[in-house]
Length: 161
Image (cartoon, rainbow, N blue to C red):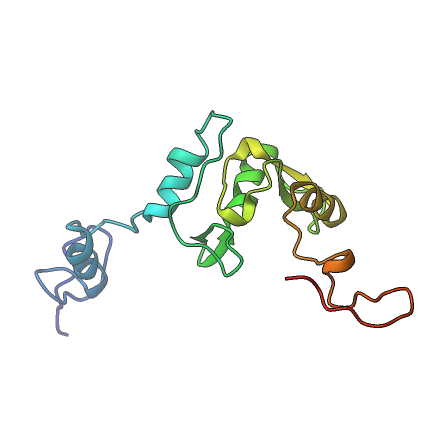
């Protein structure tokens, strides 16, 4: 019966791959300089924990990292991209009352990347749309700005530019 050597790490019974480490521990040694080193926290996630969640000011706190196609701040968390304002609202105010609730911004600058947890609250979609109208941030065209605007006789009138 042949006797094989094992990885240098205590408790690891895999065959050595390089430098006395199994492949997994060798790869960690290459990446982190430590065969027991784990994943490092990404810069955006570190910024979220150290800056966003400790922010005490009333001014808007702009997200310096990636944003989604609508302008909302995003971060990779648990192998998927999440909206930062929703994560910050969860940290500051607990879980949403229902899954349909939105993280509404009192400043109206969510699409511009504001992530100040003190500007956020849980709101229903209807309340959030009302807030957008108040802040002048609604995506919808209303009144004579609508593409469906008609005069008194029912004729279509082009929206002003």
